[in-house]
Length: 122
Image 1 (cartoon, rainbow, N blue to C red):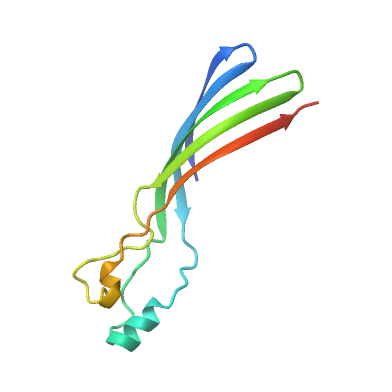
Image 2 (cartoon, one colour):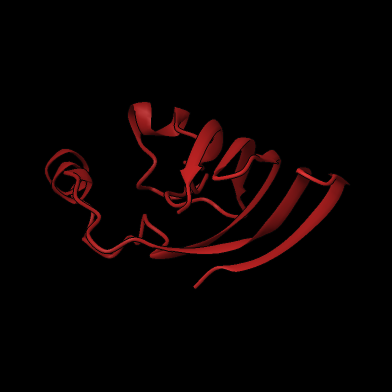
């Protein structure tokens, strides 16, 4: 469930600046890899290591310019986002971090984008 805040700055009768930001909740449903098979076959470790976070929180923000004509709305939007914590963790000192796994870093997502919108009204 996202939690967002929006604010609209009117800069002219037909144009405005939109600013928004918030927090998203992301859920990992099916982590699918062969890590458990590798640690058992290569190292002989038990399958008790929890490598994945099943939920994370991510922040996001955007700024947009919007222009409204008679029956159309045009908008250009720039947005960014970053996870608060990692989906997959590298835990130094654990036996599961053998070989090249010692070089792994925490897996986080960063989002950024540019969108153009053209809305029609009747």
